[in-house]
Image (cartoon, rainbow, N blue to C red; front, side, top):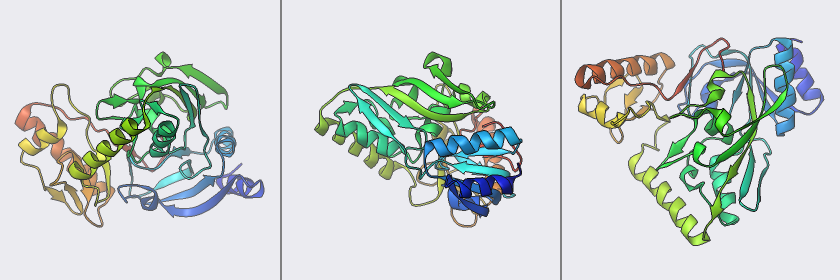
Length: 307
């Protein structure tokens, strides 16, 4: 099966709509990236799984994309098939104190579903513009909470098309990392354990976190969120500011003047410019403080890489 045959199979069976030579800048929060050969937009989670398995069996380079909020696509795009899970009809359900969500479900929707059920523990993710799959992949967190704090188990499809389930411990969670960074896999759904809370208290907490984001983050510009991981004992944004880099730019890519931990696209920024700015920041911060910064944003090369 070729890429075009996979696309035809998706259309014939009503599994997904298909975009050819689709600019990835339209699917990235940084608004950067060349075109991919084929983008599949599945209707349901099961459809996405079927298409992923078909691609793997055929040896087609495939990348699973959520909401594109923590990614930097190359200017040359992606030579292969991208399956986008954000926008699918995803299931999010609660039963007693457990919440189960498909990987393509938005974190804000999941947090709101938990609130409606009177369940607390997911508030930290409200307003993070990502999906459940991406959040589990990188152990997303904010305001003192992380996915590992509440996750119970995850279902995923491995590179051989087998459906597997792993518990929390097997995720090997660390700061902004999980075992999925070393796996060639498609996260299908995850389960979380929350605790009972008052609706008003949960809503107030979510509103507070959203207000914090509006006040402290440059939300008016395209970005990929925090560009660097937080070094032990430090804050990346503060180290960058102390190195005198606030407002520094390379082409259209600029260190935000509002929050130095963000690289923003002020207009027409390219992947090459962002990568150049990242290297400049790492070099200057190390020279100034002796701290080596590590990227949090994932760079997607034009050819297939581990997901």
